[in-house]
Image (tube, rainbow, N blue to C red):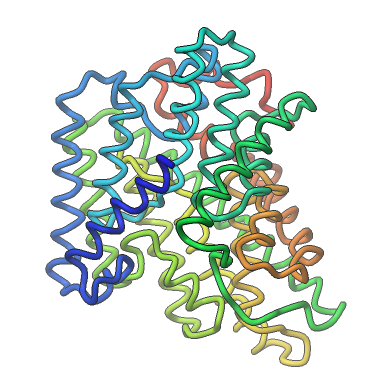
Length: 411
């Protein structure tokens, strides 16, 4: 219920001031407004956060990981309230962030705080936090299975038989509530697509490798910006983050907001290769700068946009190289979404299930397996990157992150 209320509140404000009452219609704003809005939003968030003690500014999935590691899954109410306000302001200001980061934090915190009130032991609090994460992802995307797998693979980072049952129940309950409010339609409607020939599979692997390299760039840039932010006053770093978003929006207004309208356009082949490539590059820069410099939003939504844009561009390029082998650009946009999630989150199974549930297309599973594993391998093995959440956690820890999840570093 909390995530549904959060989404309704944010979209209500967006619809009130964006052209045509469309919460995604930042592209219709003038160039001056596209620059001024994220800068002003960054300054406002920076000023509000600057007034808080440093410990209260810790928000998002990285904060959840930190609490699972250091405080026996005891998430504080204060940080959850800061995340609620900061996440809403960041999304409304048109920053290149998603609502899934705030959802993960708020879901885990709500469950943990309830458990703390009941005197639950640490093991139960950990399970409750996983339940909250699964419920939040399920409610955000209408993807119950992906919510369960994501909670286990990307946040808790372990699978236990005893932990599965309550996490599944939480995801199912959240999905049911989401469907009461928003209906049961998949998040991204697209024509049925599939690999056209077995000879196309090598190109699917190539797309996974290229997107995996992009995910490694995404993580490296995010780390760089986060380390730079540690030496700046928070009000300045957040304002700089908003400024980068505004500059990117001059060239590519699609970077503003969550960007699911851009994903829809990529999946149905409405965008040119130049537009797709521009969106992919601008989205990476805007997101890594914004989140790395302290804007309290999520990165999963931007990953989907980046992956769809990069995959769609590669699909069109593949058609130029070998027209008889290449499927539609929408097919590769979907492949790119899964590959980007796998390469950045280091959660290939969660990426696969998300691809299936987001589009309701079972034909994507077996080629998607090649792309997601390729992207994960390139990011993790070739470029030696850690997951985006662990990377943020390490960059933001005062001790340099040397103690972050060493026991679970290798899956």
